[in-house]
View 1 (spheres, rainbow, N blue to C red):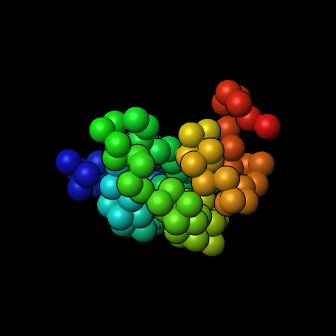
View 2 (view 1 turned 90 degrees about the horizontal axis):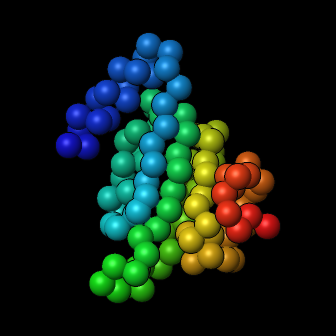
Length: 109
């Protein structure tokens, strides 16, 4: 359950452990954004990727809007953010910084 995972992340963080969450694949953007907001006090790093080719779900989502909202939440909080390749490709108009892309990920330009 998400609530159990959040509780464990908070306990780890409170005990000095650096924490990360992986939002991939994002299936429900609203849920992912809500979980980002709730987890910010005790998560250090976020990895974010989109769902691909699953019953057309990915075609119905405005990935540019989702990514911009995620960045608007996480950047001001100074969180480490890694945006996966497929999400970058789905939202090419969003300006990302070098530290927001995994350097060892394929197709990094």
